[in-house]
Amino acid sequence: MEKEGIYPFTVEAYLTDFRGKATLAMIGNCLIHAASQHASSRGFGFGDMAGRHTAWVLSRLAIELQVYPRAGERLVVRTWISEVGRLATHRCFELSDGEGRIFGYARSTWAAIDLESRRPTLLDAPALNPYLSDRLCPIEPPMKIQPVEQGSPEETFRVRYSDLDINGHLNSMKYIEHFLDLFGREEFEAHDITRLDIAYQAEGRYGMELRLFRRETAEGHFALAACCGEKSICRAAVRWG
Image: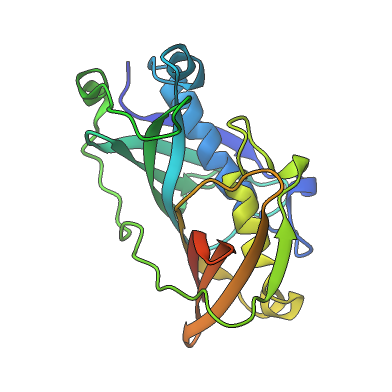
């Protein structure tokens, strides 16, 4: 079995934004789909994990993009495992167009949790190690994000049915959508986000009211947070190009 997986997608018009460009959430979903397919074909996918009463959860993600693919264009995701630890695996992604031109990379950290206790569980490292690849990923790992949860929130929302994923918590890409809604249309008309970092700290559950915070930390750099009460459950950072 090959250590790396290659998965092609087409950017459908209904998955683009008002500019006709793929959204970060759409690209993120392609990454998750590629990771899921790669894991499933190697014996550690969703069904395999469920049989052991465990599940993968995305802990951290960093995406860097030079351009955004447009409606009708091809998006090809190459993925591989770069590191296996006791409690988490590190997975990388390379993004290219239909002509093989690379336009982005991503790095991610995945933890395994026990479905009953919802706490981290030990990984079967010997079973995962054969799929480790030495392919390089030239972007920095997900960075530490500054706390910004203070003052008045920019927005609030309550977690509803359409926000939930198969594990019953707030879908990881829904956080990205809500965070990006803190920026106006005019900002997307003038620029693109060239890097996104996101750290998932706790589960967002049905009925939770979340407060969203945003602070500019440097020109074109923003730190973001989603909080339940006084507790941050997710932090993110974006860099505009």
